[in-house]
Image (cartoon, rainbow, N blue to C red; front, side, top):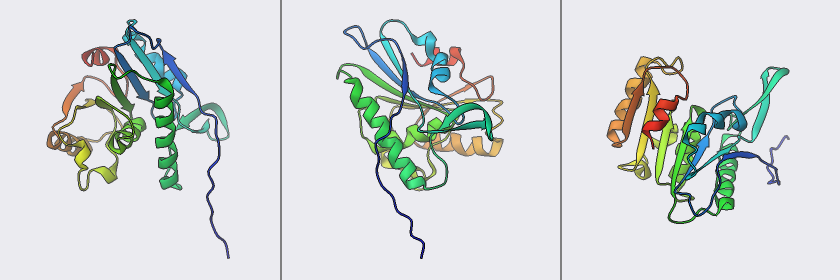
Length: 208
């Protein structure tokens, strides 16, 4: 008889930063990349926010793979459908560990932004209430399905912003309608911009 087992192991993860945490720091942004991206490249989108008073932190998904099957550029993701319960458990613990290692002062505002697949990841981390998060920003992505049917009380009437482009190829008109209805239900702020599945600097500036 075949049995499946699980063990916990120690794993080395990496994250990238822009800025420093010091007595001038007023905000910490934790930004989660999308599917098939790397933290070092993703964090470049947030360079415009570097004003000497912000620390930008980009954890990288624990799962890496080649973008073109057996070759090409190595990229990362947060999870797949395989063994999803443990995948989610692992990345929640990982993001919490990154957060804890930063030793963020209580007077710093913490924003959690998730892009694309990272938005679903961010919604789960926010809902788990493992750390202090002052604002959740969902950019070109969705809240995790298990948190919306029924809607998790943690998401109701909180400081949540949803951002989407009007020409995003990954979000159909029907899906967008459902997402916007959900965001209105939880009283989230909605920002729609002219563009596709992309981080736009002018949109980020609206969040400062």
